[in-house]
Amino acid sequence: MVKQSFLYPKTTPPSVYDIPEVLIQIAWEWQIFKYPPRETSKGEPLQVVRPGKRQLNGGPDFSDSRLRLGDTLWVGPVEVHLRSSDWERHGHQYDPAYDHVILHVVYEHDKSVRTVSGRVPETVELKDLIPDAFWERARLLQKRGQGLPCAFAWPEMERIRLVSWLDRMLAERLVEKAAVLQKLAGQGSNWEDALYLMMARCMGLPVNGLPFQWLAGRVPLKLARKKRACLTTLEALYFGQAGLLPLTSEEVYVAQLVSEYRYLQAAHQLQPMQAHVWKFLRMRPASFPTLRISQFAALIHQSVSWLDMLLEATEPEPLLRQIRVNAASYWAHHSKFSTVCRKRTTRLGLATANIIMLNAFIPTLFAFASQNGDQGRKARAIHWMETLHPERNSITNVFSGMGFEPIHAGDSQALIHLHGTYCKAKKCLLCAIGQQIIRGTP
Image 1 (cartoon, rainbow, N blue to C red):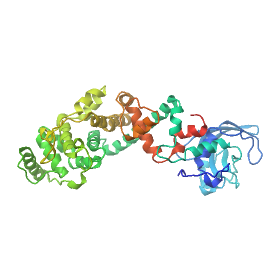
Image 2 (cartoon, helix red, strand yellow):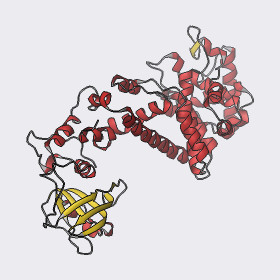
Image 3 (cartoon, rainbow, N blue to C red):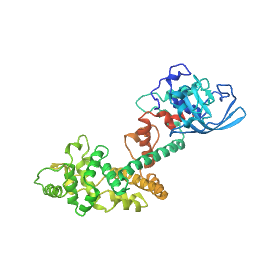
Image 4 (cartoon, helix red, strand yellow):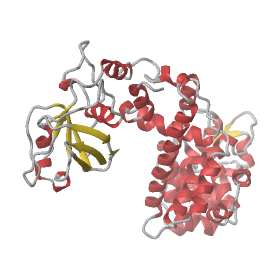
């Protein structure tokens, strides 16, 4: 685990007990030294030709490093530790994966160690080589105020550097969502069901996402398709399974739903959800689950196969227009069953349609293409992200306040991933922005 909550003493260099190992990895990767390391702990002449490529998936920290030890050029892995004794603390003396380490890079050399074959790897100590400015820049990332600790650097950083990192964030987000979808699709690769569940979840975001996914689980797509010809039947099915239908009603529309659901419940042995899982408090009526359930029923009623439409589409705009369905006219004057409200539109809002597109349709297209090796559709998914308008929410507003305005939905999705995966988790030292600050090259 990366130690993040470190507070350096005012004296530099700091104690080995005050710093995270990832900082030493950064110093080695970018060779941030007062002067290059010139010899190992044994006095062997050392020249770093190439520090190597950082590895994040186990094994030595750097691969393909090139070092000249004495008169010999060595190529191989490099391992980094705070103390050389951490080698044994991590059990590397028993691990064949570390047997070919050509250099042990440590902040503090406190013990000679051996590989599984008994070899003593050359060691270099960095304690006196790392400049004070490196530690000062690292301290900047530990400041905890109302904003992000890196906020001061964003206006000064070249946009191309930021965009490069955000491209990676977007790729990570798509891969993560693809993994979720592949799990939903199951071993049978049922992408229709996976898309159906994700569409349902998106209808409830941000507050009722999980209850909507539960509802879709209680109304399997196979059953919904059988009933899709009649919109009233579909609404009765969804409202009844959501646990939101009253026992009786004098209103014609509601009474018809209640009667239809009683028949469906008996015919298919349906078990409804508990009504209390749905949240209404402190929400705009346009986001109430009642209106959204009616709109979701209209979505399923409209298309035999949303997956087929998705795979055949070449641009996102036609899909967006078809997603924007209308709920039953009853909901133009009601926020809940028998609760009258001011007249409003029943059409699915553009913001919600975008949420469905960005969090269900495009990730499904990307996941389907990834599993089938379809590079064309993968590229299409990313292209759609870069053509749709960016989202505006509390997270993107944070970065707008720091001087970075997202140009398209790919930017906003990348910022959401960056904030959730790195900023919120305080993984500044694993973020390219934080590493640029530490390197002193914003």
